[in-house]
View 1 (cartoon, rainbow, N blue to C red):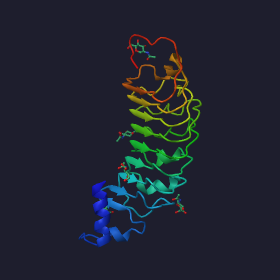
View 2 (view 1 turned 60 degrees about the vertical axis):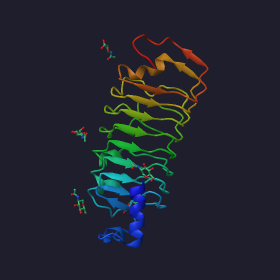
View 3 (view 1 turned 180 degrees about the vertical axis):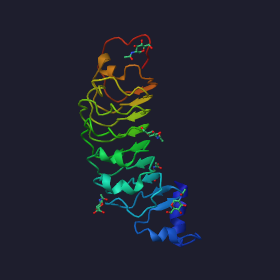
Length: 223
Ligand SMILES: *[C@@H]1O[C@H](CO)[C@@H](O)[C@H](O)[C@H]1NC(C)=O
Ligand SMILES: *[C@@H]1O[C@H](CO)[C@@H](O)[C@H](O)[C@H]1NC(C)=O
Ligand SMILES: *[C@@H]1O[C@H](CO)[C@@H](O)[C@H](O)[C@H]1NC(C)=O
Ligand SMILES: *[C@@H]1O[C@H](CO)[C@@H](O)[C@H](O)[C@H]1NC(C)=O
Ligand SMILES: *[C@@H]1O[C@H](CO)[C@@H](O)[C@H](O)[C@H]1NC(C)=O
């Protein structure tokens, strides 16, 4: 944070010896090694002139409404994409297809309301998926099934009424499932069956007004 702020100030004052790099980019993203910080720039479009070898792209706090996969073709080396705090309502499967190395996808504070079985099928390398503060009310079928490497899934602050995120066994490597601040009123044991033998270490359910717990937890597992 302070480093990027310093960079912005240095860019502004032209203090850096290689200041040309700051000004050559019309969108004024700050590029530091392979990290591009394009946060807080009122962007409505994905910058198309960043170095093609960046591995981190920060698009937070802008005015983006979509993330067209084609606009990411250039950035195929990305391992972290932070698109939080925008107004994006749709996530297309082809985005992950363009970003085969993506490990962390942060989509917090957006307007996502629907996930399909296809949404994440190409996100095979994902270890963290942040979807907090979106408008997801219902999970149908198995949108997370392909995420075999996923370790952390944050679905807090949505409108979910159940912990059931799928009908089949999946997410075998999941360690953290965050479901706080949803509308889960009844906790049913079978609604966690999709996790099967996963190595879950943390299940967060706070601020859900749970009134009823159905089905005794098995002795081998603690929530
Ligand atoms: C995606 O790229 C196209 C073609 O360069 C451009 O017209 C469009 O505005 C871009 N969209 C976004 C959201 O960046
Ligand atoms: C990434 O690209 C920039 C400019 O396009 C170049 O200066 C830099 O050396 C490249 N970094 C690596 C690790 O290849
Ligand atoms: C992106 O920038 C925001 C705002 O400066 C910061 O809070 C966030 O941690 C950054 N994301 C990444 C992946 O560095
Ligand atoms: C990404 O996934 C591919 C195929 O699923 C795999 O070969 C590769 O090692 C993974 N890369 C990383 C960085 O995890
Ligand atoms: C879960 O693990 C137990 C003990 O390792 C094993 O017997 C059982 O078959 C596993 N169940 C599934 C659905 O993988």
